[in-house]
Image 1 (spheres, rainbow, N blue to C red):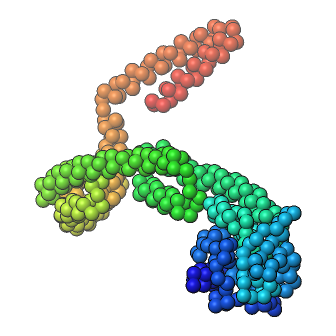
Image 2: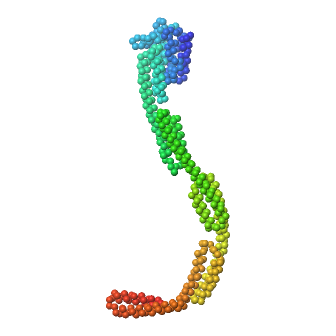
Image 3: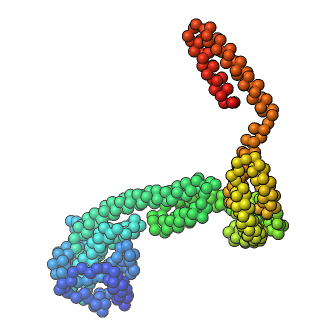
Length: 483
C-alpha cells in the first residue's frame, strides 16, 4: 500500500538518525501504531505529510524519531487538537483550527496521540538545533540550511500541539542563528587578522635575512633558517584559518622573493668560492712544483729562505677545498720534509764536528792562558810569538757550536790584551819622539808657571788673582803628571 511504503521510509530515516541524535527522556507512553495499522491515504493524510519531510535529513538539521514522551508532554500537546467522528485530525491555530490529517479505523485517542507525538518530534528538532547553536564548530552555512529546513517544517506542520509556541520558538532560533552567524563572522575576521599577522611575521623574518646578506654571511646557517621559516609557513597554512586568496598570494610573493634573493646570492657566493678555490689550487700546484725542484738542494741557507718564501705564498693562496687542500698540503710537506730532513742530517753531522773543534780549541786556550801574566818587554815578545802559533792553529781547526763561539773567542782575546798592554807600555818608554814631545811640553809648562807667578804677584784685584791662582794649580798638575 502506498501509505505503508511511505511510512516505512519515514521510520527507516528516523532510525538512521537515532545513532547521532540524543533521545529525549523515556517514560511510559502509548505505543506508536505499526505500518499495518496506518490509515489508508486521504487528503490530507499522514503519508502526504510524511512526503514533506525528506527521508534523509541534512546533518545540520537532524530529525528525531517518534520516541516515547511523558504522558504529560503528550497530553499537553493533545489539548491543542481534536479528532472528529470520521477520523479527521484538527489542530487549534489562532482563533480557528486547521485539519492536519485523517487516521480512521483507530480510536480518537490513538489518532490524536500520533499527531501530538509528531508535534513533540518537531519541537525536539528545534530544541536540538538550539543546542547545536551553542556548539563551537557550527558553521554559518549549517545555520542557514537548518533554519531553511526547520522553517519549511514549521510553516504549516501536520501536527497537534502549541503551534504558536512552536513558531515563536522558531523565530527565536532565527534570531539566535543570525546572532551566531554575526559572532562567527567576527571570530573569523579576528582569526584571519591573527593568521595574516602571524604569516606576515614569517615573511618579515625572511626579508630581514635576505637584507642581511653580505661577505660575513654564514650561508649554511642562513639556509637552515630559511628552511625552518618555510616549514613554519607550510604548517601555518595547514593549521590556521584560511587567509583570503589575494592577501595570501601577496604574502607568498614577498616570502618567495626573499628566498629567491637568498638563493641567488648563495649561488653567486658559491661560484665565487669555486673560482677562488680553483685559483688557490693552481697557485699551490705551482708552489709544489717549485718545492720539488728545491728539495734536493744542499745550499742550506739560500734554499731555507726560498722554502720560507714558498710557505708565505702558500698561506696567501687561500683554500682549495678541504679534501684537495689536504692532498696538496701532503705533497708540499713531502718536498719540504725531504729538504729539511737532509739539512737537519747535515746539521747533526756538523754539530758533531763542531763539538770536536770546540774540544781542540779549549785545549789551545789552556796553552794560551798559561802565557800570561807577563811583566817585561822580553816576556811579552816571547808570549806574542807563542800566541801567534796558537792563533794560527786555532784558525785551522774550524767552526765550533754557535753558543760557545763568543765564550772561547773572549778568552783568547783576553790573553792577547794582557800581552799587548805590556807591549804598549814598553813602546811608550822607548819611543824617542814621545820623550822629545814630553820634554818640550814640560818646558812650556814651566815657562807658563813662571809667567803666572809674576801676574799673581802684580795683581791687586782679588777675583782676578784667584782666577790666576786656579790656572796655576791646573798647570802644576799637568807638570806633575808628565814627570
